[in-house]
Structures are given as structure tokens and as C-alpha cells.
Image (tube, helix red, strand yellow):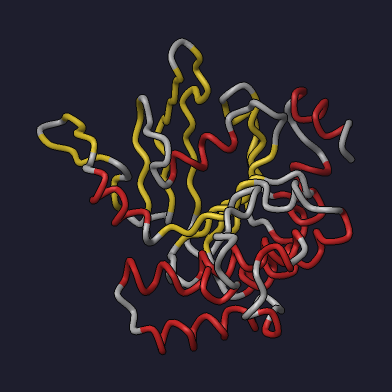
Length: 253
């Protein structure tokens, strides 16, 4: 069976700045891949390319066998229309560092908005599913709370529930705990652990090495736009093979 995510020599430049320099990577179905590395190494940019929030400069990215952001004809790539790109993105959930919730809507309303507007789900069904998702992320009692009434960790768990409401086949997490107070991190990671147990395919940019060691099936160390080292998380963390990985981890662990 083909991998859920297949990156084939993906490059991304912003003007003269080359941020991704030929990333090749596979994420198997039902697996968790954690991306680690210093700031500016291209981790978040790669994640944004996976759902075509950024277009790739070269190479190809596939999710569930679909070429992301482009169609190929006669050996040439043509970028998809905004509408077609958005249709692809519907199946890929993304959780950002900052929660981006609608401040004027309740937790439940934030969750049901996209299924109703984008997928045409009947409101009553969306509400029922939204309440189930709030329960799943441990916030069953916060359905009518507004974002300003929630802690950062609670807002992030609402953001995860909102992404799950679209029934994605893949979840992308871009440093989901880095904006949180340390004591709130555990609740968010617990939700992500449960998702992994349920077989959700996930790509997670993170600095949480304990989470990576415990939950990830694959750990990828990136530096300067390249994959430097990848493999079993415990092996990479305990005995990194590459000097650059050793140097990075020695400052963290």
C-alpha cells in the first residue's frame, strides 16, 4: 500500500532564499512522524507545503496518492485553481501554533462552522458530532464558552476538535504546544496521544522530545532545509548518527 504522504525531492524558495532543498520523505498510513530541528530549518514550511498553503518550487508531494496543489499533464505541472486546492485541503487537518479561533463564536460554533459551510452537513448532525469531539478533547463542559474564556491549552484543544470535525485522513500539527504555558502542554499532548492510538496519520513539528520518543513511529531531524537524519525515534534520540543531530540534541536532552 502506498504511503499517506510521499514527498519527492521537494524544494521551496522565497525569492533567492531556498528554504527546502530536496526533501524526500514517506509517512505511512496510521503512523506518527515528528519533525524536529532548529528554528529556520524548514519544518513549518514543509508542513505548509503538504496542504498547499505554500506551493512547492520543485519536486512533488502526494497525499493518499493525490498530487497536492498541481495536476500533471504531458510531463508538466499546472497549479490547481484555488477551489480545487481547497477541495484537497478539506481532507487534511491542520493545527497551528496559534489557535486562530473565531473570537466571536463559542467553542461549539467554531467546530461546526466548516462542516456546515464546506461539507453541507445538516446543523443538528454537526452539533451532535461537535459535542462528541469536545468530549473527546476533554472539554464537554465548554461548548458555550468563548475563546477569551478559555485557557491557551483549552483553545488549542478546541482547535484540534475543529480540525477533526472535517474527518481528515491526515493531521498536521505545527508546534501545537509552543505558545502554551508549560502546565497546559500535557493536556494537548494527551489528546494527540489518543489520536495516535486511534490510528490517525499525523505529521508533527515539535520540540517535545518526550512526546516524540513515546508516540512517534518516525523521527526526522531537519537542518538548513534538508533531512539530515531519520529513523526510529528512540534510536535517533539515544544514538544519533550524524554530527549535526548530536550537536542539536545535546543542547536539548
